[in-house]
Length: 375
Ligand code: SF4
Ligand code: SF4
Image 1 (cartoon, rainbow, N blue to C red):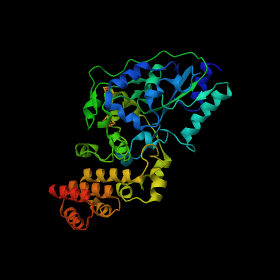
Image 2: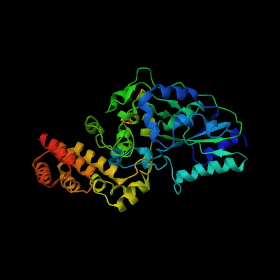
Image 3: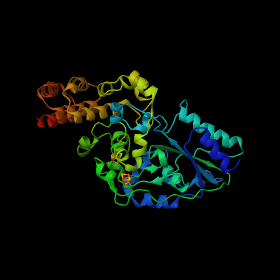
Image 4: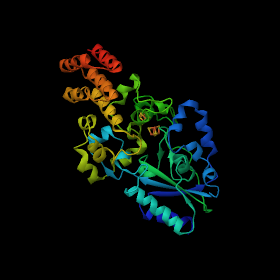
């Protein structure tokens, strides 16, 4: 088995590109991340810290090569209503794939192929995937901080596998293909999270507020600062805005696609009211099969749905938010109150006033008080 065989096998099982780079490490990446200081302390809350992963020999002393696999996840399309709320990468069910999923099996096939051909294999979890992809010549960086891979644009999932075999390394593609004057992604970002070309303030990104804001972490909690709640809009799990506006993605966006039959089948069930007041069964059957990777408790999806409803200003949601205002979870009540304040109107006001008297939590009372002040 040589480098050509590995690449052909990867293409054979459905990856759109396969590149190979050395496992000597990515010190330049580490330097750049560490230079960002506390902007990137969120890495402490991930199970796969890419600063540690940037030195493969630390977790696999015999490491020689990193095989980088590009998966084009936007070959099927999804209903427009869902695309407004959920990142396409999640609907594709291949980001951090779990056992039992097609993307997991594909990756396992690749690992088995390498192992059956005499390699010691490490899953490469924690390797800075985008950086490795550029080093392996299968992606370039965009100013929006995504990796772009030719016709697939930035709608790619990158998997890495570390092996103990010396292979032929590809020519790096570290030079961006962004037109020098283009700043469309930076201007489109609702939270100004792209602070400079190729620089993200992760704590401003909607994705961070969707899923990193969970309780039980030192410096992060479930509280989403007020300044970010409106810019979040209707996003409940991920944001594609800075990718969808990008001219480098136009070709991919316009390319004819099949419909994803599974997502089509369940789409009608996935609405903001059904998420806001979801049951455990709904969580297991409608949320977890798609959004399984970051949020570990249904309450955070419910909170996100409340924010999306408030931002919609749609009075049809008042009855659902009135139910949420009786939820035993104080956090859900607090966000439901916020949303009713944003929606406004007589009915919202009545719901807030009638619940204020019954409310036992000072935090929620405060939220209701603030919501009523919006009228
Ligand atoms: S994903 Fe959304 S919030 Fe994050 S940088 Fe891109 S446009 Fe901004
Ligand atoms: S929108 Fe423009 S600057 Fe941003 S990633 Fe795309 S090409 Fe680059």
